[in-house]
Length: 239
Image 1 (cartoon, rainbow, N blue to C red):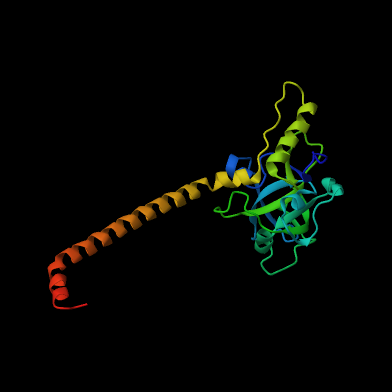
Image 2 (cartoon, one colour; image 1 turned 60 degrees about the horizontal axis):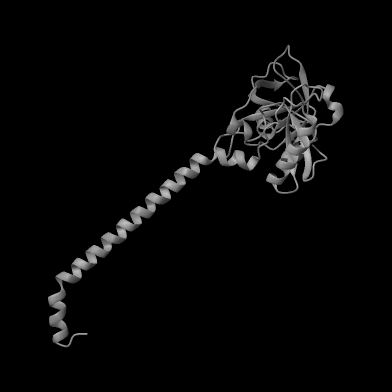
């Protein structure tokens, strides 16, 4: 994939969790409750959507890293995690720096060291409230994966090139996987809103035409009623 013309970067993640794609086409949503592991009695916890991603993920999708760092290849076998800014604010309301702090699902659960904080992203579209998110490194040996590709050229041309590069390496009885652009997913997510906006525009235009016709009818009636008066005034020299 990386050698395909027009491909700038490629990231790997567990299937069904790509931004916008989850909201547009459905996907597997997994969430866990996190709390500060160093304070097992803490009543503060957060329900976060889980993502398993490769080290290139954040740069590929353009998610800014606000603190700490992103994953590296060696993190695959390490108990590390990256949380979004919303999860960090909930877990550490006193403003504590979350970098280096351990989080877990409970007192008897495995704990993970927070190595980074990233911007909260809206995975389900612009009109849906984003929940808290936690990221773990994805095992590259996993048998199933989904890929996100950042392009340096026109998306449609790159999609065609990707399909052409995948076809020779796939078995004859396996179809080329579907490739969708984020623009396509965004249009699908906002289709209802755009339809409503178009409908309201049509209604507004109809109301404007009716109002204009009404004003014209009223003015025509007024002029017709005062036609004799205006004639007399003009005969008497009124201007």
